[in-house]
Amino acid sequence: MLGKVFKAYDVRAIYPKPLNEKLAWQIGYATARYLTEKADEAGYDDPMMRHFVVGRDMRLSSPSLAEALKKGIRDHGSHVIDVGMVDTPMIYFAINHFACCGGIQVTASHNPANYNGFKVSGLEAKPIGMTTGLDEIRRYAALVDQNKATPAGGREDIRDLWDSYREHVLYFLHPSIVDGSKTINVVIDASNGMAGTMIPKVFGGIAGLKITKLNFDNSTGEFVHEPNPLVESNLQMLRDKVVSSKADLGICFDGDADRCVVVDEKGRTIGCDLLTAWLSGKFLADNPKAAIVYDLRSSKSLTEMITEAGGRPIKSRVGHVFMKEKMANHKAVFGGELSGHFYFRDNFYADSGAIAFASVVSGLAINDQPLSELIKPTRRYAQSGEINFETDDKQAAIDDLVNAFPAAEIEELDGVTLNVGPWWCNVRPSNTEPLLRLNLEGLDEGTVNAHVDEVSKYLGKRVGH
Image (tube, rainbow, N blue to C red; front, top):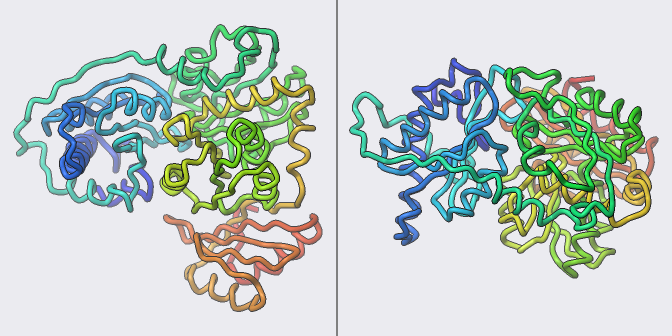
């Protein structure tokens, strides 16, 4: 069963089979063992290195999985700080707030209601993925049996961190919104997820925020639409409400509120790379010559605009494990991924949907133009969006593509990137499925369409269209 629930970046599967309370106990015990061993190896002797933050999302299976997980941690002899039902970025804040060994959020993020899982973070909220410890946790979990283990007597404390978390997030909100001298009219789609709890607790009562709520009820464990804002159809309710209510913008969060997608006042979706490009100007104005980390699939306009603003664009592989590592290594002030993760130096180099929201509305507050006009300078090129192809031999397909364009500049940081001058593309293999993912950009729509058709011949069967 363990082999079916461990993924590249977290633990995630259908509840109760294969993921259940028995496995939750094993994973809690194993995570406590792994992270305390790492703390010992690093020479930490602070008692907080035996403490773990645990939170959970609103899914109906989350309370029982969290209880089993916490018991596993306590039975190992480590201590639990339970912060309750929270958004995932709250866990990153709590780990640093308490200066403890790590934390676990019980969540399946954007997956359907019958899924659940665990996102594991280490010291300073550094992500634990398969290459950074999750494989060891899986091995430890396979070796432990709850029926044979002797409980080592760890204890549990329940802590309410919402006031401290609110203060931390509101640091990123422009004072004109806080004092009400500037009013931003925003529609928020919480996707029946944790934003339905987080938004009222963090942004409730802010004088300059007029919030229209969509899908804030997260008590039933069901979703009006899939809690994945990257799927355009899931944004339709938001787009319609923004236009009909004449709002300044709309924002849709995923299930655990660590990701978000923004639409402008016309209901047009803003690509997360273009949003990163626009927000980078604000961060670089306050932090000249700073580094900005970006997802390698991003538009060329992003790197151009970072450079034009005097910043240092830093390219990263796709995935929060790699993005956070680049952020920390380069002391980057800000970073963004196409997936809707946005990262902040002053948030422990971690991602946050709440801070992304605060940053976007703050950017609007200091400008007199509508969001569509502010984003317009980022739309320098035409983009295909991500297109999936099914193939039995991913590497052979990539090799065929490279061989077909011998004059192209080739980069292999993540999958393969081909730069052919008037157009460029990245092709990445899926970690879990027989799929290749294509992103292609060119000077205009005609160029993009022509070369998507050309590249498609080498990648297999196009799916999803």
